[in-house]
Image (cartoon, rainbow over the protein chains, first blue to last red):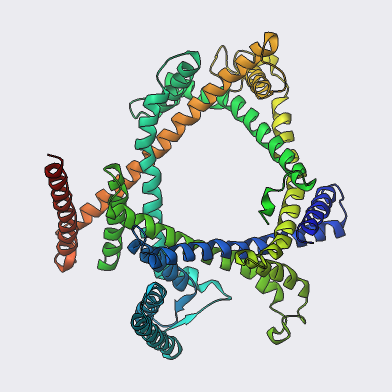
Length: 272
Length: 268
């Protein structure tokens, strides 16, 4: 029951989904659409596991006072604030007590973290009382402030200016800077990889140099030799290599999927 | 530019510089940016998935039902089943009931692997094979407009693509030893792959550098706004924000120097 039933389910649903692809009947297509919705829904619920895991890791870090535990407050605050912005939006022109509510809720969250980390009963009582008072205050603000509302069923939260500002001025700059950082690390990796020690390394070096020269602002126009050579390199030998890799990936996915359906690959079941 | 936008821009520049500070070494500014982006991106995806996937795929399908009857009188009540299965995934953290999470996991894996097999064959393998076996343009073998070896549409380029892809596939075939003619074809395959990797590498490097240029331009735009004395908000706090940031950085550098001096005096 604990291990056999999941294998049977994988086998039945796997075979069914594989063969229904070749059945152009409307019932088959309806079941296909229906089961696609199923995996989207199950997948989103599974995402909650990841979220809970992030929450627990951060809380445990604070509780155990591990290295850099203070930064976990920033992670939790960012997570909470983004979720709060995504579910709320203002009704009137002014924000009213909205930011007071955000602050009270953040303080309540902080008190709960401290409550978990507290070692003696006096501290526990103090943090419990502060968390309770802050929770009551933030609930009162949420109930009686009419300038903003919660929107769970409609997507008003995505239009919240704070949600957009967090995306535009925090998420995008940090993520693009992190990718930009790779330019420096790639440069040091390139120094090691590009030494022309043998034919293969020389080919790698020449191909990379030619593609990089293409972006040099001094070499202008599509008719320049570097542009043409780089374009040919990207669209002919590079295409051949990518084509072989894509075919290899496709065959690998099919082989792994067959192994899973037939119960040869069981890693996804975990232990126990 | 209004003061509100300027403040956000200032924060964006601060987190940009904080992230770049990792080039020196791991430090509190980088840790701040790193932890902030983890929380904010997790929250962002929660909201995006909630509004764009969970609401249309689950809640709206049950929306015509009555919540008090657990949506059983909705026109599509069977959508409650994947929701229940999704909730069963949460038993993963329980020591006693963790095995229950295998049922929804098995459904998820079964459905997605079953879909993957024909789709991967159709969309990845077969399409690439069809493209590989296109007719060769013998009439324009050395170029569509006269002799041009760098013409990507010439028959020669098509032959190179076919031979290169076939040879690279042979290189990946490890069930036969790479010796003799087979080994020579495999060698052509690895040459093709190395040229492909080199080209991809060069392209990736340039993409990263263009991102770097974009970040530097953003810092430049902020700097222009901060020092633009014609701006109506110039005196309202631009200087305060700027000097506050300078003070933080100077404070950090002094602290680093003190740590360095302490370590050196201990070593001596």
